[in-house]
Length: 179
Image (cartoon, rainbow, N blue to C red; front, top):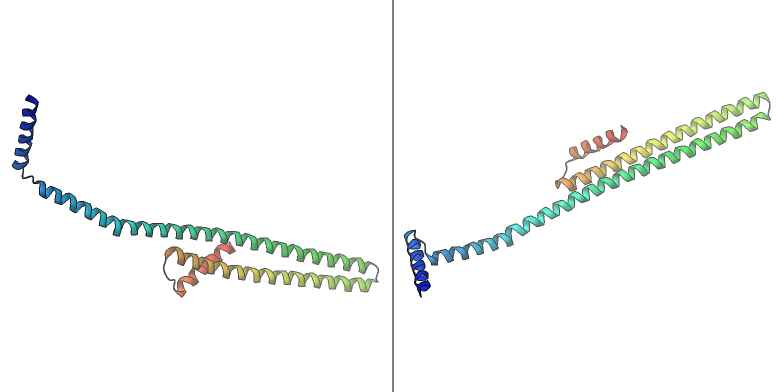
């Protein structure tokens, strides 16, 4: 029985303290309900869309990095093809020179001089053709790399690039390739 009186006394004392400080249960519960509603609205209409935007941005950055890696790989492949073409051209030029020298050994002095001159012309043409092919390949590679850099930059930054921006990015990419 005594415990009941103590509990009732504590309850009365808590009620008096609440009244002294102006605590009202109705206002308290209405504030709790308002807070829950505001929290739900923020979660539905602010938090989820922000997370979606952040995820989209993360995916675009990952895509940009993948494109950059793809560009590096294509550049390495183009350099390898260029080396192969140059090697084949040099091998063919050397083969032609060897054949010309072999045939010239059986012919008189005058024919030998003509054959050597012809072989040197062939080698010069082969080098010229190789240089032209190299220049064409590098020009094509620079143009493609510039386009890919502009596309990747536009995707990563999310803005439309002006023609001046595109030209500047292509020139920078060309300078880095030339280095």
